[in-house]
Amino acid sequence: MDRIISNSFEIMCKNYEHLLGSFYPARGSTGFTEQNQVHNFINALKVSLDDADAIYWLEFPWANKSHHIDGMVFSPKHKSIFYIEAKRFSISKKKASIMRDIKRIIKENRTFINEYEINAKHEYMIALSDVWLEGRWKTAIPGWWIGSDKLSPQLLPWEKTSHRSFSVPKKFMVEELKEIDVDWSGSNANVYWLGEKVPRAKNYCLLIASKKYNKLLHSDSI
Image (cartoon, rainbow, N blue to C red; front, side, top):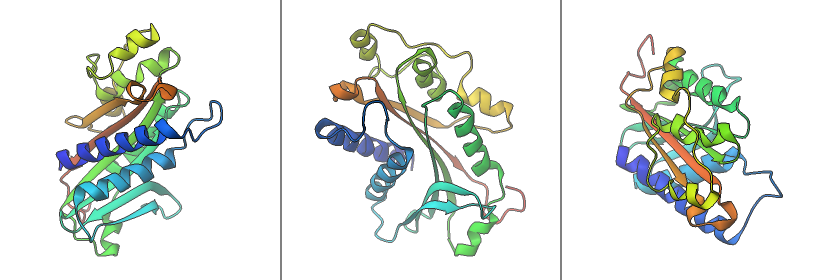
């Protein structure tokens, strides 16, 4: 399943490159709303799952019915359910916001999923984000996100083209999540720099992180 998720992210990134290479759907520095991340990733995930019976829903009602998560996908073929949250790293407080979203999905009781008669044996938390590499705190986001100061080789040419360097975060996301009682160890994370292929988005990156949770949906304490 890790390969299916990573393949979906690759498809999503290629779709962004195709779109932004011919059409720039923003005005000035307005950026791109996070709904586009969810929509594009879900479409890519449906392709990777290769499951004609897969279903998805945006703004899915959560444990507290007045709350929603950005999206969910259920694949009967893989007996897997995916919970999806997305955030734009437009301002620094969005870091705390995405961590709260992750905690809500992981720590809150998910027994209500049984009301939908979903036969899922596997659960996955998917976190999506994007960042424009402008300003010191934003250039620290890739390292913070993947939990390492050793970034993907795909990102490194950005330093040469921008004549700047990635900042090193004081703590990584996995460490900050641990401080709020969320185990994010063993998660898979990736950052993709679109500016390599799309000059008009030379500072733009897409991010994904995922983790499988084996706890049963009917558990009394999830």
